[in-house]
Image 1 (tube, helix red, strand yellow):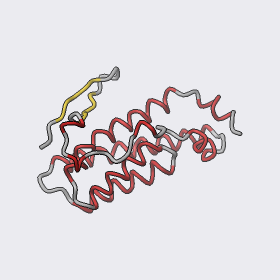
Image 2 (image 1 turned 30 degrees about the vertical axis):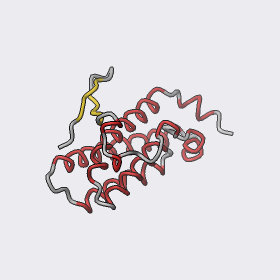
Image 3 (image 1 turned 90 degrees about the horizontal axis):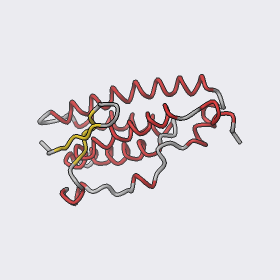
Image 4 (image 1 turned 135 degrees about the horizontal axis):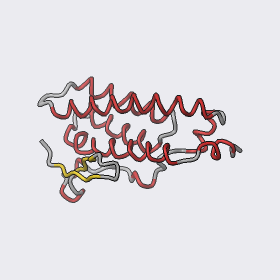
Length: 157
């Protein structure tokens, strides 16, 4: 099992973080700089919901529920000694697609990278970066919950 460290946030919910990148094997390095990608593509989301806060709320609720279930399932699989390859790929593929469809750019691209790792049977990289999925989901939730969407949705160009 990989060694992880825990960092608590103001919500008192611990977020598990992987070891420092310098301690990880080269085959585990992320090929993309997540911090260069937006957590959320707001102009695209505005177009998707057509300026309707009810549509936005429905998407937010469905995505939150689905993502929490998928992250729990991925975490459970990471604890197994021999995780099911197809199940990992299906969970990551579904997460990637749903994240991309609601403009959660950073989460979608990370899920895509981890799906590729599952395809290549690179479970070390997959499970090393799995906590980043949780962190990016937390970032998405924070942004969604801290934004005044009434104002944002009024400003559709």
